[in-house]
Every structure is written in C-alpha cells, then in structure tokens.
Image 1 (spheres, rainbow, N blue to C red):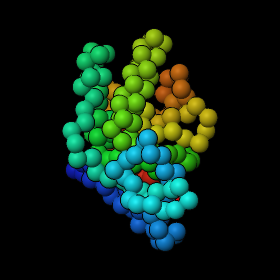
Image 2 (tube, rainbow, N blue to C red; image 1 turned 135 degrees about the vertical axis):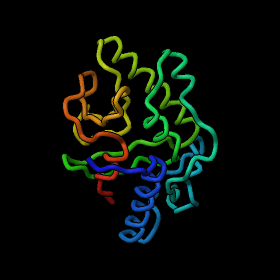
Image 3 (cartoon, rainbow, N blue to C red; image 1 turned 60 degrees about the vertical axis):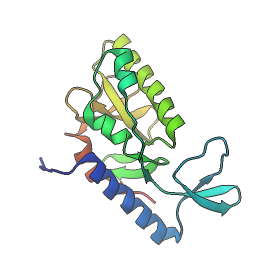
Length: 185
C-alpha cells in the first residue's frame, strides 16, 4: 500500500490539470460541450461556436455540503466522498483504470449538485431496502449498470453492479484509486 499525505482536493487538482493539459495538447483547445442556456456552469469558458461552449474543471468556491442528506437519512457520509464532490464543478472526465474505462462524475453546477444529492439518497435507500452495506457512487464504467463506489464505512473503492453488493475491491481509498488512473482524451 502506498502511503500518502495528499488530500483528495490536491489529487483531483493534479488529475483535472493533467486532463486539461493532455486534452489541449491533443486537440489544441479546451473541451467543448453543447451550450444549454438553462443549465449554465462556472466551468464554461466562452463560446466555441456551433452552439457549443469551451469548458474546464473549476474549483468550487462556495460552501457545498451533504448535511441535508445526512440529516434526512440519519447517517454520516464518508469524508472522502463528501470532499470529492465538493471540490470541482466539471463535466464527467473519462479515464482508464487497470480493469477498463470509466467516467469520473462531478457536479456541473449548484443545481446539478442538488440533483446528485437526490440520486445519492435514492441509492442509499435502495441499499438499505436490499439490506446491503452502504456504498456511494462517484464514477460509472463503460459496462452497463457497473458503478465505482466508496464503501461508506471503510472508504475503500469498489466496483458493483447497480442493486448488487460490491464484488471487486479496486483501491484502499479514493486518492489511491485516482492516482492509479490514466486520463483518456
């Protein structure tokens, strides 16, 4: 096991910076996304033409918390998970892990963060209804219904099929997992 004093915020900063550097090196511009006037984001970096905007991950400067989720469900969410989702606004970022392709999920804007909280509540309630240990998803794979999750008790990163128990441990924590990824541009 690799010991590290790196924070999740620093790990994500390194990863997102690497993504932008590699993307710009390959495409000679920032990534683009279809412009949606009703779904704007601080990530947007200007008009790219053809109804698209340039974008890049942006540090979240406002205070976002999961306290409403924790209060509603009477649980405490793992600190790694809450730190992960309160660091950056971003579009999903594709990456390659040892076992295949995945997309790291991020909130696009404050409304998307609220939607994420609703999805997390639904996921936790499903886990409770199935009498399964609580996991918290933060990435999706290119395999149908497979997600990458944090074990809410241990902080370990697992792959699981939606509605099923986690079946393969991928890393001891989010930092170790992200540090093992390769950016896919």
